[in-house]
Image 1: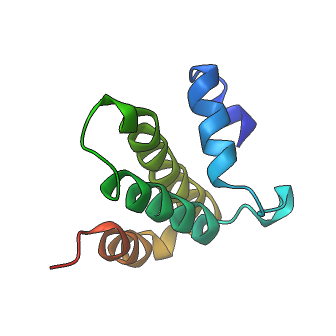
Image 2 (image 1 turned 120 degrees about the vertical axis):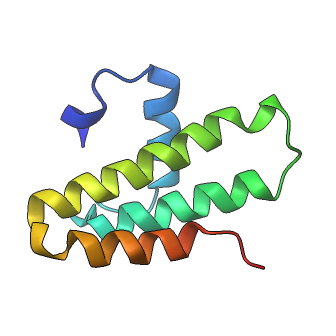
Image 3 (image 1 turned 180 degrees about the horizontal axis):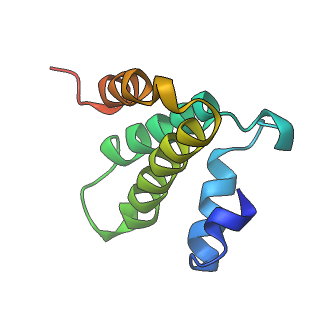
Length: 94
């Protein structure tokens, strides 16, 4: 993950790592990244819709993107199904 986030601002890299707390470096799987992205988005939606949530929103986007990238790299034949699962997980509940 360090290589994929090397060009990102330090604050964003740090917040992404915060959302991955409890996930060991060898346990950063596409699923773990997607769960962390969903959790970050839930955090955004639970707070005021002002600029204070910007870093968490960017982190959620980065984590979902990293999850899809990791899935494409490890099991590209499952990317479509994985993406659909991730989309359902991050979609607002009605």
